[in-house]
Image 1 (cartoon, rainbow, N blue to C red):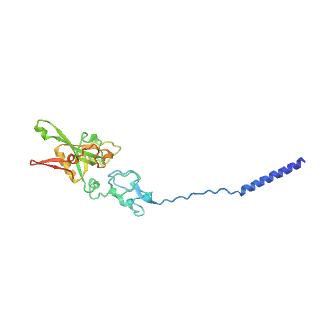
Image 2 (cartoon, one colour):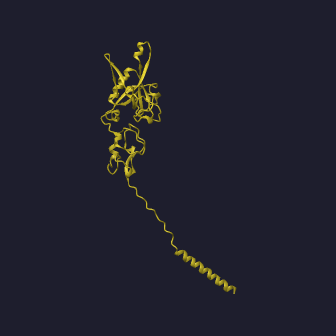
Image 3 (cartoon, rainbow, N blue to C red):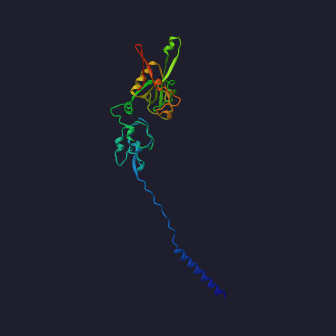
Length: 264
């Protein structure tokens, strides 16, 4: 009797296991739904391979093609599908302003210096490069670097005070927010250099401002006041004198007749 029960029990276990095996095979694995991947259209844009300082002559190794989202590419960018030979075509041009690594190259920031000197090549249309003598005392201790903006201050002896036996001196800002093109012959910061102590500063001026600077050099001592980077937008700060025409004018006496000139 015990043997018969064991046989029945064994058959039942075997049948149950076989049924479970069949049930497992019949179940299908759950389907994994794949989210559709949005395809972003890209274009090849010419960018700076590494940092390019102002004044550097471009070589083929300075630039490279890089994929850029087509929707974010400006019309000023150089695209490979439009200009496949752009790397060779731009070789030899000079950077008018600095480029950072990965920045798209734009021809408006480049200049062809063939047939002219470098300074003439980087000057914007209608502007002049004029130099003035400086020293550590009149040049912000050497902390003025090319591409900084400065105010030009004229200090001179007051001739009216001399008649009364005094020794009064006056000072006035004759030019405001002027871009520095070079200190001596340095047009960029090199080798991690933090200060440039030079004897001359070359400034970017309009023709009228150039006349004012040259005349001011004959009237007294000129000093450069370094402006903040955030203050180089061309607008006067709240602490400036509201009478800008008076601050930026120079009094000229010719044959006893006094006239005032202001930069144009």
